[in-house]
Image (cartoon, rainbow, N blue to C red):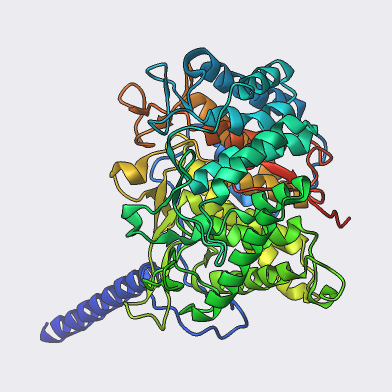
Length: 568
């Protein structure tokens, strides 16, 4: 009997050890992707294969799994090409545009924006209206073939005066007002728009330092006095001062006024000078001290707010002037722009090395994300965060456009960048498709293959009718014609229609996880909803010969401008 007891004890101890070991191994496996790893030196080329693994999935399943479920994501490898226009979805989006415009005309005519819940108008500035929604919508109405609505918008511009006693945002007025007028001119050839654009451009030009090309944050349209924002500590945003060259170059080309071109060249020289002062090669901080020409580097980097359109215009300005190459310097007056393409390529390498994260779980094709990051070499603790801004989701489309316009002979590099673009687009689409109601939050949190608003804080959980995901899906569809991009766009647009449509237009949502009737709306239909969200939503279902990407380039407010020297 004592012998039997010993045997039993030995067996029991062995079982206990086995169970403990099994539990430990399972715990370690389940946590192997949760560690906040520091960014290590790349061992496998520019980006390598050993990326930190972080994935997302939803806590609440989408309302319509047939439209937006996991099966759709798993079909991302589908290489079937879809080139024909989708007339059903074109009609669907055209009706969305018509409804949004009708609400503005009915309740906010003469104002900048529509408040669709209270059915009122809203102006940005106390001094008067710039009719932002009108200027932002003209090209969309034209492209969508809404002739009656387009004529309404054009008639409204004849009543417009920019001689208002208002201090306006240089950036927003340039990309929305000036960009909208220039796009209308580019599409229609109507010189009425060019005349208005020149008037507005002359007023905006007073914000630009002629020597450095750096623009002040605000400008008095009547007084001509430049001002800087206190919330930026009287410094300038890199994105804002870096996102006017596209519009100024187009205006200069079509009016013959060289001052606008010289401003674009001046800011290019300044960026070329500051390039060598970046702490991490290719990654730029969000602020510049214009007084001493110094980057204000906090050590934390992103591709979202404060920096986003800076990266965008590095590529697009170069494309607009005809994609010059360095060897053209003796013959081409546009050779100055070659530095921008060089800076863009440098930044892409750094973004994909230090910011982007790739995950291959649980789906067959990798999904990638773009969180904020603190790379090695900075003075603060290193590592990636677990949050990503909706604003960052323009990057997949920009990467794809960069590959399409590349003059590089490094085919392997281009293929890897395109793979990143496709993977990132899937991560961005999941912000919608894995949401409780098919609507993305402003800032998403990633953990354990899950996606949700970064917090219940309204700035994280809200939806502002943003366009960035649809922008990337449009570009990727045009360049690859793979069906998943239209499929995801269809799901997103139908979710917006279902969740955001109200009697007088479309409203944002304060918390994307809350259902009606508890849901609170944001009483604002941003002008970029028609300008960007619905324009990209429309064009993704159009045929390639409508605004072809080898002839047109979009500004950061989705206003298409015809390339000055077409290359194809």
